[in-house]
Amino acid sequence: MAATVNVNGRISDEQEAVISVFDHGFLYGEGIYETLRTYNGRLFLFDRHMRRLRNSARLIGLAIPFTDNELARQISETIAATKLDEKEAYVRVLVTRGVGELTYELKATPKASWVIIVKPLVEPAAEVYKRGCNIVLVDVVRNHPGSVNPMIKCNNLMNQALAAQQAFKRGAFDGVMRNYRGELTECATSNLFIVKNGIVLTPPVECGLLPGITREFIFETGRDVGIEVGEQVLRDDDLLNADEAFLTSTTREVVPIVAVDERAIGGGKPGPVTVKLLKTFRDLARAG
Ligand code: PMP
Image 1 (cartoon, protein in one colour):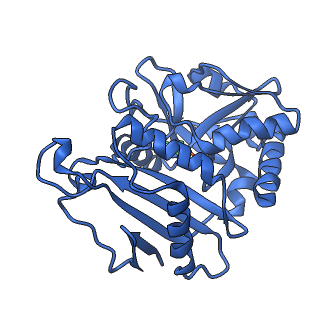
Image 2: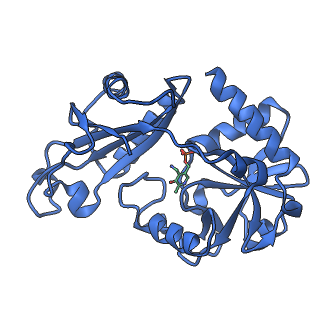
Image 3: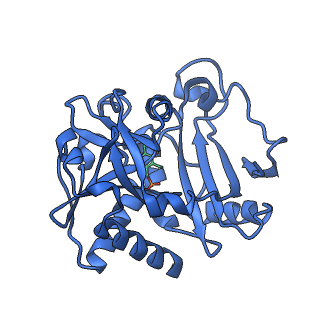
């Protein structure tokens, strides 16, 4: 890993980047984050990521200590200090409660901490897009929205880490979590879509999931090419009997799913709707 890190405005390489053990991000997982990437060196959908970051902050009562423009400048400076070797940049922005006494009292942490991590973006292998990936249904339940709301893109990633680790143990690319009602929500690190009779469907945010930026962009991508994309409550059978399925995330774009729990989806090959959306998504993203 060749990361460059900006901690509260101080840029250094990864070995020198430090944060206090009394930071409540470390002590209590009280923090939020965003993962962005560049296309042709330019941050993709920066404004939408900022909107989601500010919404996450609002949901935990955290004051973001910078304007969007200030953050954009700090990210640019951090990217400029990174050896990218012609690759696009992976950018992770974290904001935490800050350093303070061992108490949940908000007045103990008057100043938020922030960190920007930049490294060369590692995209999934071309094979993953060509052949598709296998996923599994995991038994880790997605956080109840009344507990730690999945709307909050939260640094406390225990829910997703346990789900992903269960999936990896079973040799899968990602794992789908259900909510407390048994409805499908999303994968541990991405949003989930199915295609049935030419219509693209994804669970509504009310099911308890992260409103992915790529997910949102897929609605617009679909509109551009005349593919209907909508929200619908989905259950195991909807996924297992889908014509096609795919997952989306900032760093992985649109990845075809060709097997769930070792059962083939869509004949075990990436389907035409998925392939069209992936191509259109990439064309739009690269055009900026
Ligand atoms: N759901 C979860 C739980 C995630 O961690 C991610 C990746 N950030 C996503 C969905 C996809 O979101 P986005 O398209 O904004 O990267």
